[in-house]
Image 1 (tube, rainbow, N blue to C red):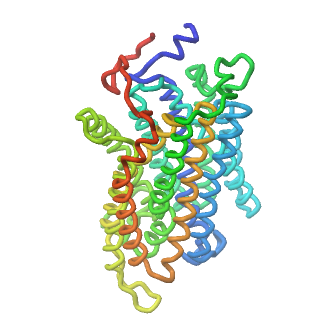
Image 2 (cartoon, rainbow, N blue to C red; image 1 turned 180 degrees about the vertical axis):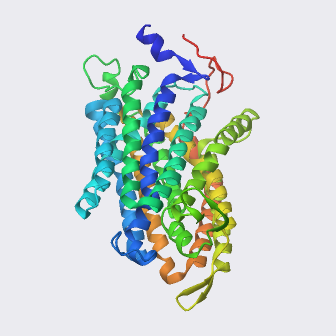
Image 3 (spheres, rainbow, N blue to C red; image 1 turned 90 degrees about the horizontal axis):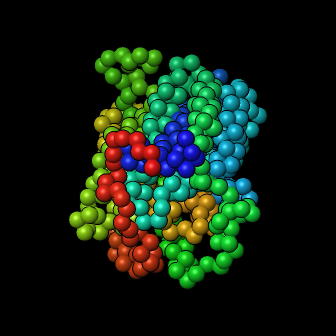
Length: 472
């Protein structure tokens, strides 16, 4: 089969390369979220669960501060990772390099030593910086400008992200609870190794996608030299403004891995009336982080199809509108956490009565619906507006905004030790609701800065779906 035929082959109405990137990102997220699910619990283990043989005995405030800094650095490294791809090696090679570094980092974390712990985290930070912005940019590169399948393609890709997150938090959390923290870290490393093998095998379906545009024989080489036009500058401006939405969204949402994780461990009644395999009748706190990913697997296609039909009815469906709605819906999830915190009864420092699990589940449900309105759409938005010469850099800037949101989450979560969970959860809910409404009020001038970049051009695909492989 000719290379052009390989590159253009489709599966379920989308390029086969989309599913290659789907599985690569799924395994990368399995490793990352599996490790993330147990990170804060590991660091605080001696104090949190009375396990003097594990972790470093950090306080909640110290753990949340470190968690915020670590996750911030993971995403901030996307800026140099994207810049290096644009300027020197291309997205495809950057993803390969990032995968290798991630395999090394997660593998080293399995070693029970403090030097290995911090060395592994440094390698993971650098590895994600190379892989994350560039693999997302490659997804956008599978579609031509104006192709109405692009947004739905990102929903499919996002499903892969969260399938990995669901399995990672669930399996790694259970393994760590049963056999020990470093077995959990080691399992996360195995997941990343599988992802790297998938990428190497699937490169044949990614011909012409993610190549370095600056090389001599590249037809786009001249684009790298041209200055930005006025329209491109306006689009860059609205992208940077949209990053503020991203910072606020993830600053609230990422309480899941910090404050909400510690709250689940300490103040949520996790006992069941029956036993589960591996874990018994008490659900490990880390496993609750799989709920968000599970809901995404259930609702991703539903939400994606809803917005397609909504837009085809002529109703407002711009990316900025969806992102603002996502912030508001996510904010309402924190009202359930406020309710949960009112059920906790304390006697001095002793917890007499804990809150019901249902409030945690409902909070994750609303967070998930909000995330599905905002996050995959934001990824697609960047690939529509970013100039070719800065494609990976702008995706890196998007993930850097996500990183700043993560740091903000650690800071806000740390306030709970002084202010209390009820005040923090309620404050987040109110602030994010008002912020989302503000974005809706200034939507029209923001949309003007996009200069029609989101206008759909005619394609041969009426729907972002199909059920046969088509060799064009």
